[in-house]
Length: 262
Image: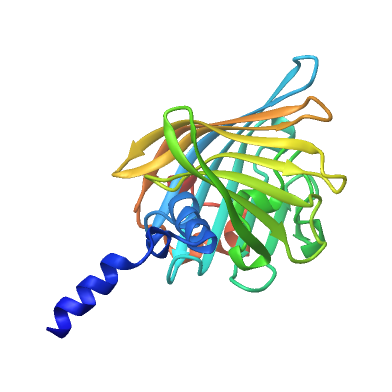
């Protein structure tokens, strides 16, 4: 009898009781966008395009390894192939939950490893429209989140989430994200400046299945105020390749093993 009463009570609950909260949507999105697999490797072509159409190219390999649960520690390593003035330059991130990440940049021209200060996390990443923080992602707990509506974006049903930074340590006042209800990847993000005006837009332009993981293989970040945009394409991508821990050390910054970056 008690079992039947419980079932009846569940049936009488409003539909909203089963809906995801904004925090749950963003955690699922973080897992789908930044934490899939035990590790990840991608060959990346980055195209920097000025308002007038002039193009500059960055080609790089990105490595990522997870430590612990989704939302936990991660390590990133990036090696640059071109252009010539940045060839052999490397960038490394130790990402931690609930505290500032550690970031290092090795500049071969001066043979120096430079630590990126926490306050520089919103600076441009190698001249692109992405920031250092965009590369490894932002902690969910750094923002308050609210679902403002649900709507279709193209053929995809989406949650539309407003994320407002708790601290004034970023260059925007809030962000609106369209999160795919099926795979939880971010399909579009709008960044609003401190005056509340839209100034930067991220779009996921292509999604492919890589080893069973839906993966954003083409993306664009456009600065509406300057007219500059950055297009990023994964020309190769793979998960669970067995990256060793020593691929994420200062020694590796100066001399990475070719088998992992080629």
